[in-house]
Length: 405
Ligand SMILES: *Cc1c(COP(=O)(O)O)cnc(C)c1O
Image (tube, rainbow, N blue to C red; front, side):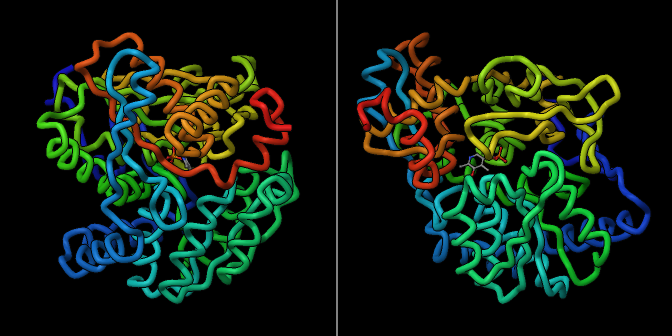
């Protein structure tokens, strides 16, 4: 592949190659066009960028550090593993980066309320936080199954002043929550702003969320160079919708020598319904208003998906990732539940860092990769979030195997 092929900016209709676009009813097309226009304007505005930068620094705690995981690297016995510590952000993950951007845009557009779906509750908590800070109302749609599973995050959202709306249709998880939030949005797209939680959905969201997350890679590039005098040879991040991955990768896409890996969840097996390895096993299709690789049945309906990491179980994936796969710039790999749980305990016990189960997929792959590489090469991993949210679930279900009664 040559970097000349790379398109960072989707075309006017929001396409990265053949992926992306906007498949919506006409009344919503009009609203998306308004959001695109407003976003393009503020993206260029020093006032908006300064405001966001100030929040990143003084509210989120950016820049997040880079940490050389020496013990983990030594155990792997090959390349050096480094972590970009997005787990140290306020609210504990990378999602606050785009939630602040989206909420700030909503406010500038005169919207009264931000709404969103949430699966594990991470996007909901980050958005409820941004809404509280900026004085916006916030409605979060969440499947009833997830409400039970992710109880602490439900409480967090309510403490932050958000309304959590239970969704009882279908499997009562993320996909149904998106459907319901979408229905609510269509009813009033003027006073509400639908803050999408990853680099998915209709144009301009994949581009906009990518831009807000790209601060991760911009910082990392400079920090890594200052720390080591060079750039990393390899980058690794987990891919649900793909926002933390594209956030790290964007600043390095043009460095052709740097190998980039996105890690998808292989769940329990590669049988339908037991994984969410969209780029690995999906085919192009349309979901939630955009075109991407999609895990789908013969009629093009999304298949049920599963991963131990709730933040990764989405049957679609960002259009830019779909494009970067096709041109061969990024290699997409998989890690299963068991490997992710192993990595969760390994990182906790070797480095004293409890990672989110989502991030544990990236850690597991990085350790596998490190073993195959010489000691003088480096792997930079996006540690997208911390694992506090996962500790009860992990110890109940897997604790016995790791010496916890
Ligand atoms: C939501 C989440 C993810 C997955 O979302 P992406 O858009 O693929 O980044 C990964 N890690 C953490 C900690 C999350 O909360």
